[in-house]
Length: 269
Image (cartoon, rainbow, N blue to C red; front, side, top):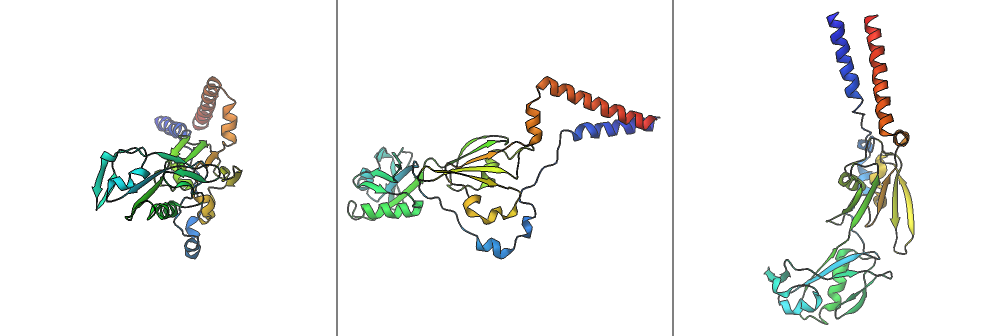
């Protein structure tokens, strides 16, 4: 009799604990089966391109602080410190430049310059060509950074929100990691990617996170600035949302009691 009671208690413990730990659904199933030549074919280092409504900071570093001062609006010239022969801005706040709908910014001395479609490195070289030697006789170092490189993750994730990407590169998996991963109630096979182009046109793409070939599509695998990911709830979550907390608690107790009663009847019969 004592053995039967202990057995019942053990099974009951397993029953109760298993209810709170559903199995995780994997990403990119069988990804290890991808061929090396496929991975090499699509290998690339992603570089973000400047888009309309982007916010940029631009600094011009020179050996003579006064030479770069007209192009560093908003900065404190007194905070410029020499670094490897150049005076760089330390602890200063640079003016930001908003790329307009046509892709231009108003740059000091030079006027309107078009940066849309350029990578950060290309923009640096382009600005340098505009100010040297026309405005600066010495060779400057130009640094362009995105101020607003961000992505949004919504829906069935642990921490939905908008996330700023410091290194200006973000994959789908990076974004989900920042959001605390998809919950057990999220549809991994049907994630929505909402993207807006330079003309304001929005596109919606459905993504299957369980598909290993996701990594072979750089236009989808790498997110652009201002992309939005939405993870839809599955049927279990949708049904659960229609039940109140008190009803859910009552159903949980009833279900547990039925399971325990059935278990005890089976053991002691």
